[in-house]
Amino acid sequence: MTKIKPMESIIGGSRGGKLVGNQTTIYRRRHASPLALLAVLCLIGTMYKMAGINTDDAVDIVATTGNDIDTAGEEAGGSQMDGMFSSAENIEEEQNVDEEDGKSNASMKNDVTKEEETKGEETGHQEGKAMTQKSIKKEKAKAKKVHKSESKMKKKNSPFPLPPLSSLLDENGKIKSDVSWLLELIILGFPKSGTTYLEHNLNSDNSYLIHSEQCKLAANKTDILVPILYQEPPNNVNGLIRGIKCPRLLESEYALANTAQYFPNANFIISTRHPVLWFQSFYNFRSYKMHPKFDLTPMDLIGECHREKNTKSPYVCIPDIDGCDKTKTYNVCTNRAQYHHALSRFGKTPMTSKYELDLLDHHDMSVVPSKAKVFLIEISQISDTNETRAKIFRDDLKKFIGISSDLPAMKHESRNQYPDAKRKERFMNICDEQYGPLREILMDHGRKASKWIRKYFLKSPDVFVSSREFLEEQLETWTVDPCDDIEDSS
Image 1 (cartoon, rainbow, N blue to C red):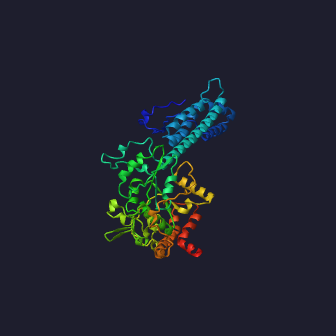
Image 2 (image 1 turned 60 degrees about the horizontal axis):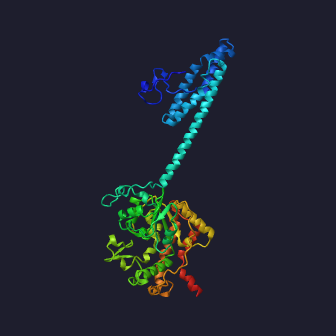
Image 3 (image 1 turned 45 degrees about the vertical axis):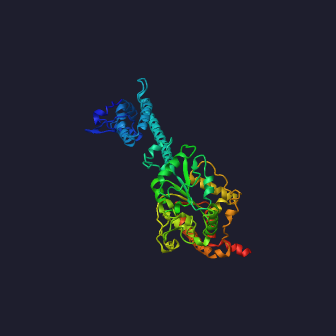
């Protein structure tokens, strides 16, 4: 058996082999490769034929030099294997065991014939090679398993158990470390488009949406949002997906920038609605909830929401930071029906051609490009009566969020949202003739939004939808005044 020299005496503790003079020092016992062994046998056979020696006797001679051949095999095969697995300690340990098993035939007792010893050596090498391949497969499988685990961790990077809140915020309540894992899902638009219903139905075993609007990102109060996200979920299970809802985030000036800075892994769900029907629903909602403070007529709300000191802003009013008087419009205005302006802020489309920019009215809202994924919904998908398509919608939404349990059927409950007749005094019917000019403005917004979403936004690989054909059909209805059907039937 070849004597193995101490590594430290050769290369100071480093691994592998090193040339010393004309000889390669091997640190681990290896088997000769089958090709090398065969070549040696053929060469010896030829030499003996030339010398007139019977080739049958060659076996005896080869057997007497078996150790030399074995050493040659170690030099050839061993150096190759060291090059492949010099850093794989677990494979090397398995190989040492395999080699000892494979070498057992090469170090047989003296009463075994030399011919059997040679055959045993070849058999032992084949077994050792097979075991080595098995070790390689085992290591690859192990690496694959680790890769899958790492991928899962990247998708759901919430630490578990949770670190103390003090490790996230300093003594002044300011963010001091990574909090990105605290928010992975945001429902951010648009009001009266089913956002509250989505919020109530997207809670599951491994997801939790805060049960109140959280618009701190719009008001530059991310520091206040962090403890809410940390403390409110009743069951902080491993991999919990936390989410919030705030319909005006996408239309506020600072929310997207704050999200990109603190929660870059968050994805978005955006629900939309026919602009004419949206305006009527939103106006009546504000009239009821803010009665009697909200006293503006629908015609007073044409144009921008943010109207302060004769300054018009493309964003909604955030009193805490804008210094605006929210009570003037309560953020009800026709400009909010320009969904495509807000959606373009994600930077998912080229916005280089004149045609696209014309559709976007060359707006001056900020654009915050990111790799965030967006799931776009039209409210008709939430209340879809086609059970097959509705099931597909729920499954697609479940997959997008990354939750494990099935979502409940999303059917609107039959309930009277506005029981107080007094508060309903200012309700509008947008199909009334007096609101014709208002509808024309909303329809112009709807036609442009519908065309831009279908032609540009849906082509982005970061934008996800369910039942695209059905969705596009619903988006196309935005080009038709819903009051026309009522007038035709009257």
